[in-house]
Image (cartoon, rainbow, N blue to C red; front, side):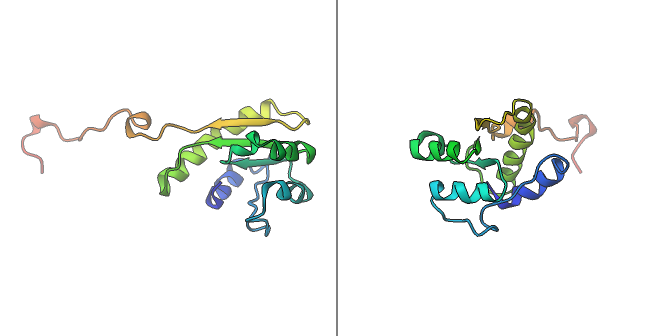
Length: 138
C-alpha cells in the first residue's frame, strides 16, 4: 500500500477506522511472520496489502490467524503516479464498506479487486466540444 493512500482513507473513513502504515511505526522491511505480532501490539486488527502471497504461504497465513489479524488483499495492477494512486484509492473506498458489512471477530481474508486501468474502461467518451458545422476551429 502506498503511504500516500492513507490520508484520503483517513478522511473518508474518519469516524469508523484508523489507518497506519508500517514504515512510520518503524516496522518496514521486517519479515511478514515477525511483523504480525508487532502489528497486533499496536492494536491493529487488519492488514491491508498488495502482497497476496501472505495467503498462499502457510506459515504467513498461520501467523495472521495466530495473531488474530484479518487480511485485506488489494489485488491491483501496478500503475505508477496519480493514475495508480487513484485506482488504489477507488478500489479500497469501494471495497471496504462491503468488508465492514461482513466483518466478524474471527480472522478472515478478503480480496479487493482492482479497477480496470485502461482509458476506455474508465471513460466512456472523449470528443472535442468544437462542432465542424461551426466552421474552422479557433
